[in-house]
Length: 242
Image (cartoon, rainbow, N blue to C red; front, side, top):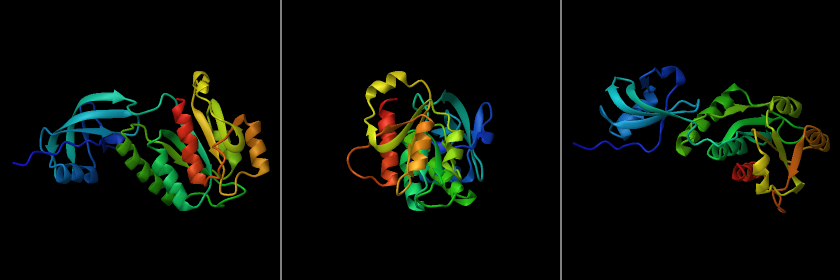
């Protein structure tokens, strides 16, 4: 008999499908576990619920459309940074939005807000596109073995986005800013809020608004970067001091 292929990537489980001693995978996740990994009763696997929980399980039963797993152990906040990273991005085109989520999730971003600004795309993301980004974030969460699903939204203005931000340390990418020193790690005691301008940059009015809201300008080097590149570069710098 062919041995089951033990999964090295956790499966997604909806929080409402988790009980005290067992959980039930969706049809899609169950199909992958059974067909790809040849799971049978007793096969070990892991699952995440997006709320910070990693469940170590063993297949209890193989139902027609769902796998039921016995929960052997629960661990909190696996794969998460010690502080959250909130990312505000001036709205680029759709493809860069996808790239920012795809690369930002494994780097530890805990919330994304794609903001309509004076420059760049003037749209606000609707429910259909936000749902697609949520699916991409779930895939990135599993691949990177994180456990807390980032929030993804789209604000109609920079003022609205900043009003929802909770970062104790606030940084904005700007060519006139200073380098982000590792010494800052000693004073970071809460979540970070990072701001990256849209194609064409923040307007002068928007930049001065951010400065008035305690955003410190941080340089990303001498070259000009696209919005999606700048977003990932700033997240990477912040991640290094957490």
